[in-house]
Structures are given as C-alpha cells and as structure tokens.
Image (cartoon, rainbow, N blue to C red):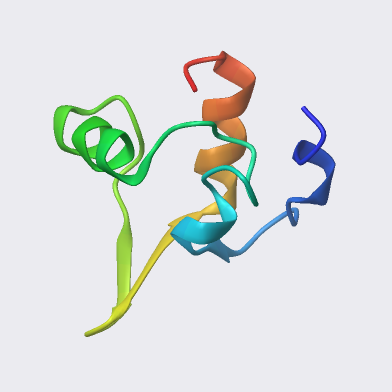
Length: 68
C-alpha cells in the first residue's frame, strides 16, 4: 500500500489519517465504527472531550494482518 510508509513509527493517528483517501485503510467511517464496535478494528483512545486517536502500532498491525 502506498500510504504504509508514510505512517509514523510510534504515536497516535486521527481517523482522517487512517481512512482513505488520506490513509491506508479503504473503508468508510460508518464501516470503521461498526468494526470498532464488533472488535474487527482497534479501539480508540480519548485524548480530550473532542479528540479521538488510535495508536500507530495497532493500525500497522491491522494492515499487516490484512484485515483492512
């Protein structure tokens, strides 16, 4: 995938950096949130009242397993 190498090694990602067209995972927001709910995708972390992020390591692992 072309966006795989543009992911940082560590840290956090916002949803717009995870999902296509800017990110490596080609699913819609509704599909992503349904996958988070049923356990297919990693659970987010809240950094604040309006800031939701995912760990880069978990997104990389998801890409490597080919689930997304």
